[in-house]
Each structure stands twice: as structure tokens, then as C-alpha cells.
Image (cartoon, rainbow, N blue to C red; front, top):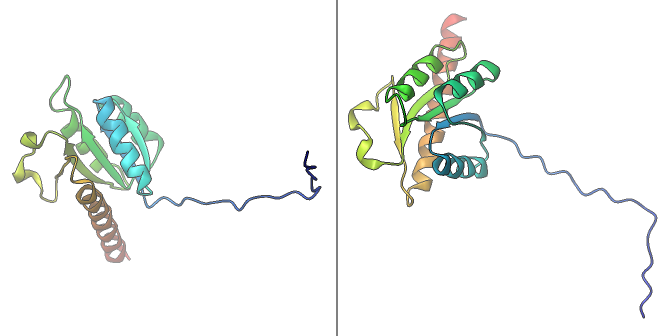
Length: 152
């Protein structure tokens, strides 16, 4: 039988630091969609908080600062996504906002202006989704820097 010797020295493995690109609030009343999107965004390096209702999302907006707020709230009041995004836009730190939909037929092509972006999601569009999220956050950062330089 082989003899195992033990070493008295302690070994600490290197700590892996996962840095988040940005903090995202994802409000989606469909649990499967919310968990899928949260997993995709987290794997891409984003810190993601989820909310199942508009009131839960508003509570999170009161507790934390987000660079991006994504909303797909279909059940109950059909206007919940729009109200949540309007509320988010009034926060002092002014996060980027977008209405999302995994139901492609529901995406309104006329809503992609400055006031509201629409991000559609399909199984084969994950890279496009991540690109759109990165662009929304980047555009928000550009606008924030522009406002800061104008104020200075």
C-alpha cells in the first residue's frame, strides 16, 4: 500500500476576481426568460439583479445604481414596462433603458429612438443581444461624459 505524505505548508490558490462590466437591472415577469437572460448577461461579465414585477424593480432602483435597466413586463398592466423605464430615466444617475421582448412579433420597430430602445431576443441572437446591451451602456456612458463636460 502506498504511503501518502502530507506537507505542513499551506497553499492558497490565487483568487480570481470577476470584474463586472456594468450593473444591469432585469425586470421580466416570465421566470424562465428572466433566468435565461440573467445567466447570459452574468456569463458576459455583467452584474445582474432580477425583478419579477415593476414594484420589485422600483425597489431595486431605490437601493442600487444601475447602468442599464431592461424591462419585459407583460402580465397584468400592459404599461408596466413603460412606466418602469420612465421611472428609471428620472433617477439622478440616468441609466440606459430598453424594453426587451422574447416575442419578436411584439417588438415595435418605431421605438428605437433616444427615449426608448427595444431589444429583441431569439435563441440564435445571443451575440447580437450582448452587442446591443454593450452599445446601450456605452451610449449611456458617452451621454454622461458629455453632460459632465458641459457642466464643467
